[in-house]
Length: 219
Image 1 (cartoon, rainbow, N blue to C red):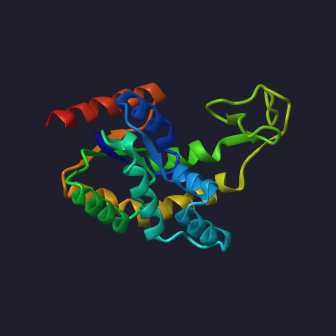
Image 2 (cartoon, helix red, strand yellow):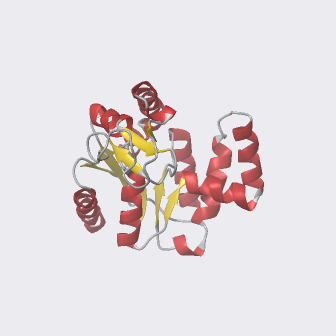
């Protein structure tokens, strides 16, 4: 299957993408991974992206599209892929359609993870990270430490990242609504969108997604 995964920040896209890709035996292609791989490998696209990022500018669509195209042409993606973070806007969605059409391929589904805005803010703004080891992550509501402000694993100080504050989260949501959400209507016009609730336990959301994709595949 060829799938695009969309949803607001805090919807759990990265977690669900990893589980779904494994269950479907297709590669998980995330924009973050594409950027890191191209920059670390020193590819021409990576050098271009790094130059923009170092200058504090947004990476142009054509660079992101080029990276995605290169990745989708690799042998492990011949049987399908799950795109996470791409396309990020309608221009990128149109470019993806053009790429696939040139290879006589098409998307099978666009999986939309739906989460109420207040829940997104609660999920992200409640995160606390250990200063000693950023792998130790807690949540003031869902996974609180035994002692407030102290990491259970090493005793380090827990803190809230600057991009996890409520004001920053709401700004990220505004950007999502303005730039990325329009691709849902774009794909709805093609009859590709499958919307599921991303509330609940991780495994329940994964099963919900698998069931919805299975129905799509049967149509």
